[in-house]
Length: 308
Image 1 (tube, rainbow, N blue to C red):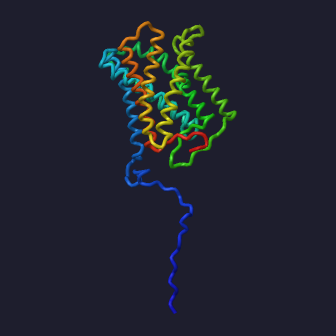
Image 2: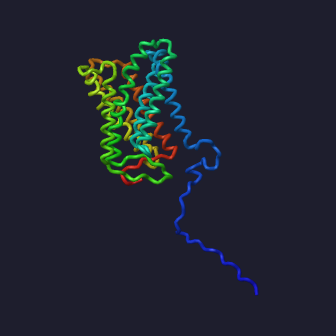
Image 3: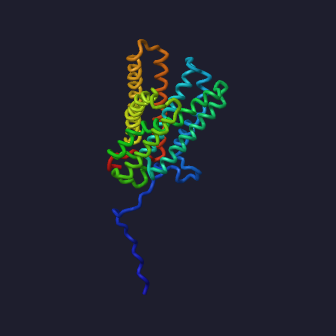
């Protein structure tokens, strides 16, 4: 008597299956790259930021305010300005432990600052006195500068649930503010203010605090109207095409508003000043957009509230 033929196993078509990345979603899975190819754009943007810091002082020394050469120096300055906002956005919206993000944030900021210092030291026109004057002000003012940029970003995170998530990882739950968060925030603000007081010329009766009273809200406002919209257009929407249309329009509006504010405080705005403002704002917007698109290529998305 022959053995019965085994019956084929039928698979229930609606059974749960583990999530898998398709080749389109993760094209590096079949290529033995030492680094995930989806991170190449992010590495490229980081290299551009390093180069911008290195050539900041040399370009200013070579071209000064003379157009058209000043296009390079002021465009480079806009890129350096944008990197401060990129680092602030990653600190406020990134994944993982806050203390770990804070350490990486300031390690990157100090490294970029060191690159800028190196570029200044090799510049023939930069004297030791000029470098010393910068070192007596910038390192002590930078924490308060960064804190002003981060303010609207932290509000967006804690009150509206804005955060960066990996599209192929489980999203982190939105955690309400606790006592530990308030205590840590108070310590960071106190340390930032204490360091700002150590900057050269920032005594109790100095006009520097008046300048900070104007600069801090201005930085927070720039962060609000630039980082948040760009993040939504490039990291939240299904396709970044709408963002690539809206960002140039937003940039033109920012240029007009900036020139208008300057014209209200000066009797006459020269054409060269309009060109310089346009270059700085356009390069700032381009660098911010490039960083956001690179993060998107690396698999990051913007989650808002409880919706991934």
